[in-house]
Structures are given as C-alpha cells and as structure tokens.
Length: 165
Length: 184
Image (cartoon, rainbow over all chains, first blue to last red; front, side, top):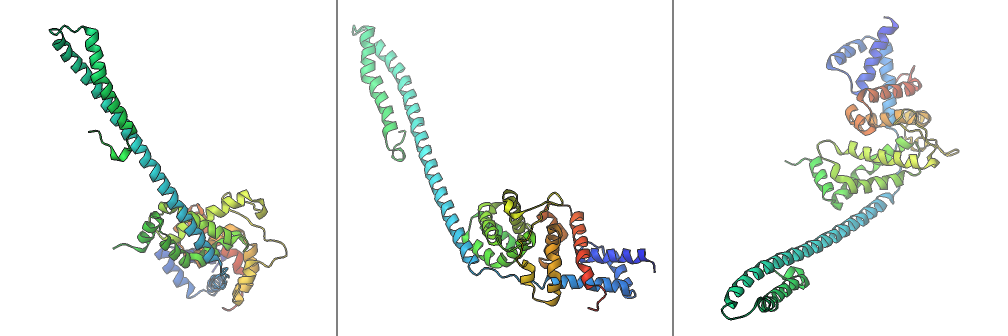
C-alpha cells in the first residue's frame, strides 16, 4: 500500500473523530482498519490524545459559586427596582396625559356651549331691551367663566380620582 | 411537553434567579474549563465567569431554547473574554487568525494544564496544550471535552464548519506525535 493511500484513510480517521464523516466513508474506513497496522496505530495515537484531554481536572474556587450567586441576586434586585421605577414614571405620565386630555375636551365643550348660549340669550334679550354688550357680559360672567374654571379644576384634581364627567 | 431548553429559555426571559442558580450549579465547572482553554491561564478566569453569568441574566432573553444551552453560554463567555482581552493589554494577546486569540502565560508560573493533569497521558499533553495556539486548543476542548458538534462549535467561534474541522485536524496533528510509535 502506498503512502497516499494511508494518508487518505488517516484523513478519514480525523474526519471520523471530528464527527465530519459520511456513513459510507465510515464503513470503508472500518474495513481498512481491520487490515492496516499503520492506520490502526494512527487511530490509537489519536484516541490517546482524546483520552489525555479528559485527564485534566481544574479546581474551581470554592467561593466562586457563592460570589456569582450573590452578584446575580444583587443585579436581579436592581433590575426589579429599575423596572418598578420605570413603571411608576410611566403611570405618572399617563395620568398627566389624561388630565390634559380631559381639560382640552372640557374647554372645547365650554366654547361650543358658550356660542350656543350666546345665540339663545341674544334672541331672548332683544324683546327685553338688553343691548349686545350686556348680553356678552352676561354670557361671559355666568357661562364662560364658570365653565372655564370647571375645566381648570380637572387639571388640579388628583389624577386617578377625577373623571371627565 | 416543554423541553429543558424551553424551560431554561422561559426562566431567562423572566430573569428568574432560581433558574440561573440551577444553571450556575450545572455549568460552572464546564465554563471554567472552557475559559481556561481559551485563555491558557487560570488567573482572571473567575472574573470572566462572574461576568458571563451577569450577562446571561441581562441578555438571557436572546436564548430561544431551540438549541442546547451550552453553545450559547460558551459564546457569551467567549465574547466577554475577547472584549476584555482587547481592552486589557495585560493579557498580551495576539490574534493569529483574525477572530482567534493568543495568550501569553505568565512567566515562571506553572501552566494550568500542568496543575490540572490527573493522568499520565494528561501530564504528557500538558506542555503541548499550553503552547498550542488557542484557536486549536479551544476547538479540541469544545469537541472532545464538551462533546459539541462541529455546527455548535462553529456557532461559538463564529467560523465556518470547514474551518472548525481544519482546526481539529491540525490540533490533533500537533498533539498526536507524542503517542505515536507506542502500544496503547
């Protein structure tokens, strides 16, 4: 048998050990090994390397696990606190947004209502001899200002306890 | 039925410390062994181990549970070690294959392999392993000690399967002559 032939099978041995050989090649290799002493020697030396690699036993620092677990617990606690803080901040922002939304809605309703009230009062006021300025002042004092103050109260109310209604 | 890896993935997503404690107990030794093979030294490994587990807690959500946990863990550890080594010149690193690392053992100190050898064959391999280029040592350890497949090793080291296979062949070729010409 020539050297190239052995090299080819020894390459197959490497592939087999690495887990990169096909079933067909594996079968061919097995047949070859049953009759070839140099390739058997090659396989034996390779196996001793692999067995030798398993002959190392590293000492693990006995305090390492405790140290790692303490660090993990501390970090987990910090993560939980951060999440709780973020959640609180988000809830606060949500409440503020709802307050402003309620204020905007109330203000819009106030203006629309004021326009309607003004038109109604103006019609009623003509037969009663009130002039326009008096009607406007009346609507301002008795309708617009109270409704605007009500809208403002929505902003001042403690967020989660107030409603639009 | 939920597999072990799916349970681990769920626990990590939830930041469950109990799951992490179990993982630490289960994988600590293997993590130490892998990092020693990567660094070629024992000192500093404990810090990387701790940092690895903290990273697991922090980014555990990226483990999907569809593959074994060890390759994912080793990849996290490898990234941390490589990042730290790039930043810390005290490790005297030199890259020999772009993504690989080379560590210089501290002068005068016995190598971790000499200290850890428990069999005659291991004693014979200790010196060669220490001087073996880290990329080959790492690949041999992952294949023959951690029993990972070429595909799993490929994911850890970020190299094609063919490259991983070549590293195994070359690593074996470097260590094999010590046992040639002997009867097993």
